[in-house]
Image 1 (cartoon, one colour):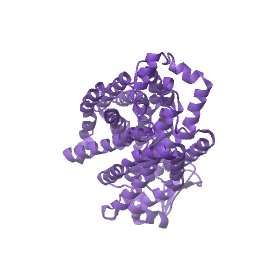
Image 2 (tube, rainbow, N blue to C red):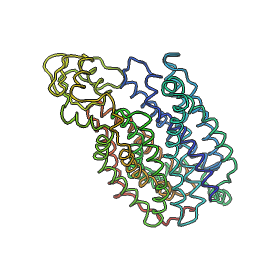
Image 3 (tube, one colour):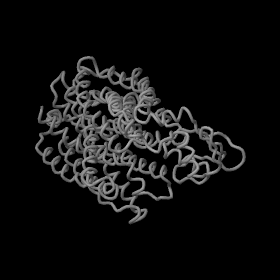
Image 4 (cartoon, one colour):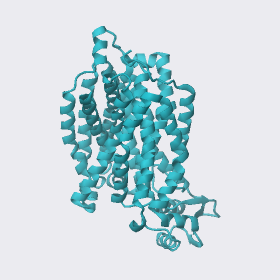
Length: 515
């Protein structure tokens, strides 16, 4: 069992490392791979949308590799997905920038992200199924809890790789070319993963099904053609995995972006705090997986989603208090109001009007503001008691500094201990919800279609609902001018998922996964 867990987990950690490395460096990719005409906020949103491109392909990967896993075997599928992921990731590190090859740069980047998503679509279902089908009855939650470590473990490994490379070449060189090193290093991880997985044996449940002639010849058709399994996939998506997905991304990626992009905490400090929080919280994936072997899967998952939903606003407010107290005081003492009739939602273009340019400047500065109807054309911005007419960047900057808004968080006032504690709490919510999910999904579906059936709700839930949180939460915050506004995305989905899950989903503890 130890060999099964280590072999499956290490390979899966490396795959998540490859997939999340882009997310860790998303803030770097805007100016590197997208047109300067988009503006800083537009380029950042474009880089997040490109991250989302990998998420879009994950369900299609689950169809392709899920069918392969249910017909050809779990082990062979493992080897193919890890090879595809490693090659695509190394390719990202070799792409020329927009300044070098123009529009071809983002096209190649999106293509490689899609290949990564395709590979990841076949990875998780195989890892969860493989480990669960080897586990001793009554300890399957504990065993699959190790697989649940892998996603956060891959994120943690990507943070360490970025941190180490920045230290090796320096911050300026890292921004210029050193960011390529963690991507190219995935070639070494690919070799290790292939070696480990080649030495694993096929799942005993799959071998028994094949020997008895019970394996499904058309798992995709059966999973989607039989109303019972189709409905259960939909219920598990909306009543469980969608909520778990937004909790996962809100408590890790979005929290890291919030520290860096909004609160202006320097990259090294924010990354170090998140890395420590992840390291401290990681054992709890296994703990809550094991706890689900005793009290059930459903109450732990639903309880974790509800806890996250009711505490996100105070937790992110506390992050502001301890990471950038000067910004917190300025926001309370000198509110910022834009009065204009010319502010529009920007998706694929940069700011055009005075109002949009002012809003862009405030969003980049991490300044909470609101837009009110104005009189006539143009824009008037009130910063505390000061008023700036039109778009005058120097005057706006002077007004913000005079009102107490900082250009960046003061390192001397960043309470790194409390920031790490708050991040730990948010990652703990991830552990509570995510720890039992693998075994819960495995137990929901019969062995003959399991790989296919559990992969689709997992990758739509964590990929679409969870992964696109980074984009939509940023879009909501920058459009409304409220730095906390994007949290509503996570809160609404988590609450809705909890309600549907409590109402419609069954408890699975005690089911025979060999059936």
